Image (tube, rainbow, N blue to C red):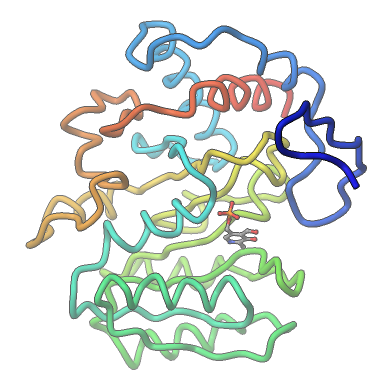
Amino acid sequence: MEKWMGGDMHPSYRILMGPGPSNVHYRVYQAMSNPVIGYLDPQILACMDEISEMLRGVFQTKNQATLAISATGSSGMEASYVNFVEPGDVVVIGVNGFFADRMTQVASRCGAKVIRVEEEWGKMIEPEKMISALKEHPEAKVCGVVHGETSTGVWQSLEEIGAYCKRTDTLLVVDAVTTVGGYDVKVDEWGIDVCYGSSQKCLGVPPGLSPITVSPKAMDVLRSRKTKVQSFYLDLTLLEILGRGKGLLPHGSCLDVLCVERRAEDYL
Ligand SMILES: Cc1ncc(COP(=O)(O)O)c(C=O)c1O
């Protein structure tokens, strides 16, 4: 039995064949040995700018509000609902797996009235099915779908849902945790308003960051909230107050992981 407490930890090298975490590139390991510097150091601010720019490339977007949140992919999911949903708002979520179901739990904790569009686990949700639910609920503030449902390996087509949401006031929120960096995620072309990922999957970085991008349409919704965002840590309204375009949120960042993300995107 390996000893994990009170001694050196030497995890064995493993070829990771699951849907994440993935094996980490050796250059990323090299970047992890960089010295820690202050989170307001000009070098870090410059690094954050570069990360935002690179993430725009990964997400195929021009969205100014593109950054890496300092926490795993679940923080991207939480941020997507806590920022854009206020108590009593209607959200329509496609549910065909474990993470889609988790989206409904996160949305209902934000006080949303959740309309579930159910599909058998293992099957993609036909876009027409999502669109007809949206037509039934034109008041829906958010439409949520998972691009790559890790629990079943099912990919979700997004273009038609995005094209529909683009013509309405509904925001399209997409979980791209398993796809971003490994599969096309065309945020602007497909009309996605909020899209988040996670560092430890196709980006090949250790867990600890959730890249997220927010469209101008979604930023307008954020600015017109009647209530304060209930989470301080994930409050994206503070981006404009504190961020000055630098992806800053009101807390320190996982600096070491940020540096390695910068390196990983370099070779992506
Ligand atoms: C599709 C999907 N969404 C969200 C998550 C949560 O991400 P994390 O474990 O990085 O918090 C996962 C994790 O596997 C996932 O596969």
